[in-house]
Amino acid sequence: MSNIRSEFRVHLLNEQGIVKAKKIAQIFTTLLNDVEETSGKDGREMALVRTQLEQAAFFAKKAMAQRPENQIASPSVEGT
Image (tube, rainbow, N blue to C red):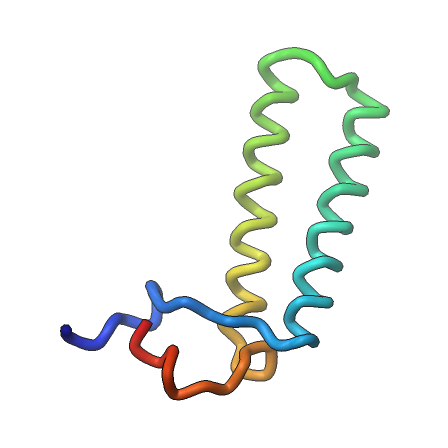
């Protein structure tokens, strides 16, 4: 099997990475709760807000997970 490009590798998080992932999730949770409190929970626009925040949270976590200091150092997952 050929080497997998870095864009598609699995990133196993160390303790620091797990803490950061939870922090990102909490930040986005607080943001969505605040927006829903102000704008209401219903409607197409709020569905779009939720979807876009889910997407933004995903990419924020991915950006964090790609940083070597947040990963478990293990040669066995290098090509995964």
